[in-house]
Image (cartoon, rainbow, N blue to C red; front, side):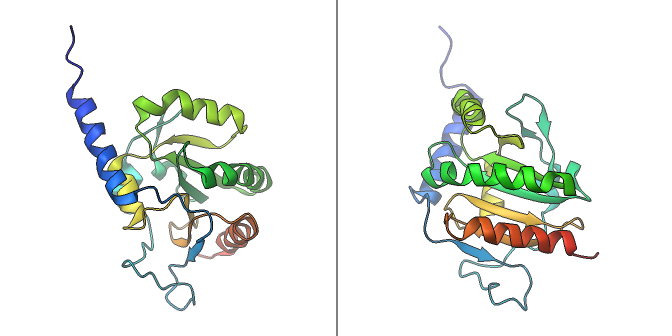
Length: 201
C-alpha cells in the first residue's frame, strides 16, 4: 500500500493550513477596497503595509500551473495591460465577480488587455472543480493556480478574496481591488483598465 502522506501532499496540506490561518473564512463581498500605487492618490493608504508598485521578479518568473495543462508565467505578459485575479471556487463573491470579468475580457481583449485568474486552492484537490467552474462560467481568459508564495506575496497580509491587480504595459500595478461589489467593482475595474491603457512609459 502506498504511503498517503507523500512530500508533495504534506507541502500542500501545510500550505493550505497556512493560508486558512491567514485568510480564515474572509471571502469578502462588501468591503471593496481599491488601492492605488500612486502615492498622490487618495486611495493609496494601505493599513496593512506598503503597496506593491510592480510584480516582484520571483512572481513574474514563477511557473504556475494552468487549468489547460500548460504553464503560466506572468512575465509572458510583459508589454501588455494585465489584470491578475486571485479567487477560489468556494468563494461566493468570486463566483459573482467572474461573469463581470468575462464581460470585461470580451470588451478589452481586442485592445490588448490580458487577464489571468489564479485560484488560491490546492491544484491537486481542486483540479476538477476549477475546470468545472471554467466551463460553467464560460471563462475565456487564462486560469490556473497561484503557488502559496505567489498568493501570499500578492496578498500582502490582506487575505480576503477576490483580489484583482491592474498592471500597466510597463509593469506598474496602478490599482488593486479587494472584495467585490456588483454595484461598484465592474465600473471601477473598467476605469482602471482605461487608465492603464492610457498610461505612458
